Length: 71
Image (tube, rainbow, N blue to C red; front, side, top):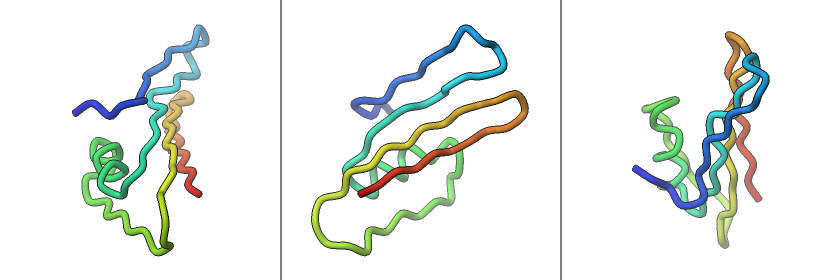
């Protein structure tokens, strides 16, 4: 699966790595992005109108941070 706008970025500092930076416009796209991280995720949009979101995944040592932003 390739989601348009998704990028994997490596930083020079080996203790910090951005694994994913992707934008999504539907709940289905969000579920596809999160599938490797959480296969059971179900996304539901409760508000009307377009969905604009971004998901970023950072790995810092033994910790993984998932950042989810939506309108």
